[in-house]
Image 1 (cartoon, rainbow, N blue to C red):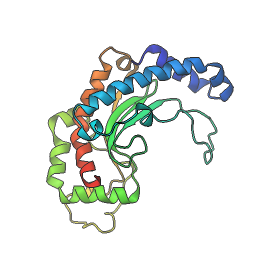
Image 2 (spheres, rainbow, N blue to C red):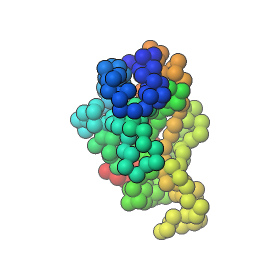
Image 3 (cartoon, rainbow, N blue to C red):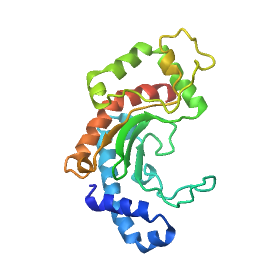
Image 4 (tube, one colour):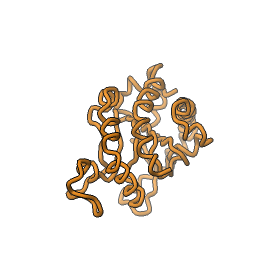
Length: 222
């Protein structure tokens, strides 16, 4: 489970983001990673109980966890390490084009949710068509009482067009959603919540609530 020590390592990494410090504190990193890895194992088992695609995917937890190393080739920020742990649970793992469930662990800025974030154009087109063709079902999913309670902001866009995308009718009742460049939900957690004994169960509830949205998105992509 996530502990104070897990968060403490990430806090210190943020203040000392260089290779020499990291190597000198590698054992502490390995301990923090082990805490996160253990949580991911539990999350995979929990999600598999209500999402058949995850249950049958045979996912290795490592295939779902983002690497701690940053890709700095094209970045002005040359800090070598991310200062968070992140897992994306989806069919085919963290690089999957499918919708899925995520948990971002960062001191003072942890969050979880599900959906699809900044998909490739061909994938985004398919998701838009799914929403356009089955808008009544979409509305039922995103207006469900528990969904609205868990995610008061509703479905969020990872960017938004000012006009309807090419090939879609501007008069469609789904037009505002069709302008979205991604479809995801987000709920933030305090550090106190993250290290509490029941936190993993709370993540299960978040993921279970967002499963109909994930399923709706993936229906067109499968």
